[in-house]
Image (tube, rainbow, N blue to C red; front, side, top):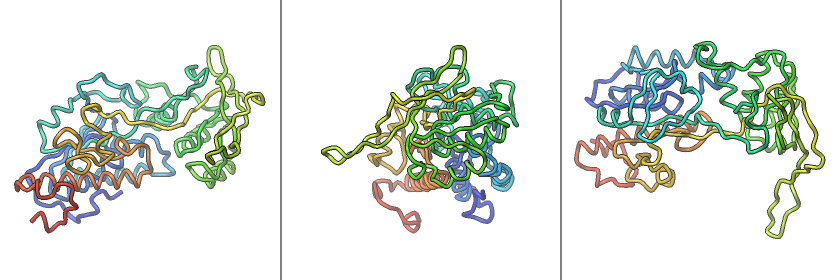
Length: 365
C-alpha cells in the first residue's frame, strides 16, 4: 500500500491543484501518482477513514486496514496530501441514497471543485447495491451485500447513525458467488452466526470468486448449495425462510445456446433469520448525466478518461463497473497520467498535436 511508489521523496510543487473525489483503490493510486508529479492534491471522501471498500467492505484478513493507514499517513505527512473526510460531493441532480452516506457531515458541489482546481478526478466507486426481483425482497432482515458488510466493518469507527445487523446465533443465507458474497459469509462466521449457507445457481467452477473460495468456506463450516436458485423470501413481519429450487443448464437450442432452467415444482424452504443478496453493485457518480460515462467507456472522448465536462476525469469502478482492486488501481493510474498530460500540453498550447495519441514522456518537454 505504498501509493507513492513512483518516487522516493516529495518533488518540487508544479503550481497545479487537483481534487480527487473518493479514496478507494483508484483514488489513492491516482493521488500517489499526482503527488509524485508535484501536484497539490485534496481528496474528498464521505467516510471517516480513507480506503473506501478496502476498509469498510473487505474483511481485514484480506487487506489489513493498518497497511492502508500507513500508506495514507505517508501521503499526508511526506507529500502534503489533504484529506477532506466525511464530505460528500454532489451534482445538481437529485441525490442518490447510497451505503455510507449517513456518515457524511459536509456536502460540497462538484461545480465548486471544478472552479477551485486545475482538474478533478472522480473515483467514487460502486456504493449502490442491485436488488433481487423476487417476492419478499423488502422484508426486514434482508440486506444487500453492502448493507450487510458496511455496518459490520464500520462499527469500529462509528455506530450512532446506522443499524448493525445482529448476527450472533442467527441463521444466515447468502445469495451469490462473487467476492462480496464470500466476504459476507466470512463476516457472518466471524460475528458468531449459528449457521451460514451460500446459495449459487451455477457450479463452484463457474463462480466469479473461484472454486477455491467455496472449498475454504466449507472448511470453516459453511454449507455451499450449488445449482440452486432463490424463488421467494418468506416471512410476515421479517425473514423466516428462503424458498429455493434446483436449476440446471438446458440442452443447446438451434443456435447452440444454453439457458438456465429452474425447476420451481421441486422448490423447498430453508430456514433463515438473515438473508444477504450479494448480487453486485453499481456506481452513482455526481452529475452522472452530464459526465457522459458511456462515451468514456467506449473511448469516444477528446481525451483518455476525460468526461464530457472539460478538466473532469473519471476512474475506477464508477467507470468500469465492479472489479478487483488491481483493475481499479490501474484505472486510477491511467487517469492520473492522462490528467497530467492534458494539463501539461494545455499549458503549452499543444493539445491539438496529440488528440487520441499515445504520449511519450519526451513529448511533454
